[in-house]
Image (cartoon, rainbow, N blue to C red; front, top):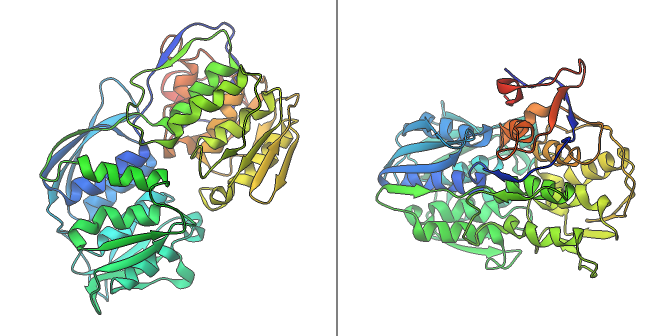
Length: 429
């Protein structure tokens, strides 16, 4: 049962201690799926996120001929255990130039980039395609790097759909990749580099300072190359909504169960941003490149409730993700009464008196979850297209609604009828 077209968030009537579980990291899950497929043997991924983006990756691997089994997680409904039998770098299935094997990646950037590089290890032809929005998202830097390695890529304007072949016109072992538009280009190459024999040089940003490239390198180092078991930590980006809820509802003591112990996820730093709710000290600008990843969107949406102006910088990459996120955040916050100024790749958010509004989500899961979180403090927040949260967090609204200590105790209503949603009616599809 899918969510209705518009839902309304009713703030909790009472606050109580909360200890919430968060589904697994999408970034780690989709990287681990590629590494498990390339491993030599069977690998079980525990605590793997089960959402649209990871399901797309699993279905693509099945299309390629890999044996993949999915079992529900008994503790966290948003997780599963995924078991994959790797083939030591071999891609079991492929197509021909006249009939390439079709691989669909939806609007999943990690699947689009990681699979494209991996498919170059195959011995045949492939066609990678996605949604209309995925056709608009950048791919050219990855295609150029694969071309430097000798692989044949045909893609109009550097976008999907793309035709590619694992057969090379001329073999080179070295390539350079720019991550100015997306660090996923470097991660895609690094995940398959050992089996391809590739030497990858990263430009456009210091690779050691790029959190997502560093995550990829660290995961490669510890991942079982010959099969085994691997445990995926909770998603810090998804945790940001609940950490923010703890700040928006001051009487609530909120703890995230099994908080990530590694330093792999840049959004684990969201805790540092939250100190602004209680600190009187001046705070430096918050940078998308340096300080936070996707959780900077959560920070932007709650910033009008702070006592001082906030500057969010280096937001360029947000413009080429699931939606034009800079414009979306400015537009929807303005609807809520916030004073927001857009200046190039910077948003300046002033302290503001907020009101509820009907939020256009642009089909973007993070826009939906950010403004639903704001609805825990601001009455009357209505979220259009709430099912888009299925991309990374299908049970998000169920966790908002569940009674403490496992949830926040908010009510989620069908905005048209006023009916409270319960049980499976809170799950996104």
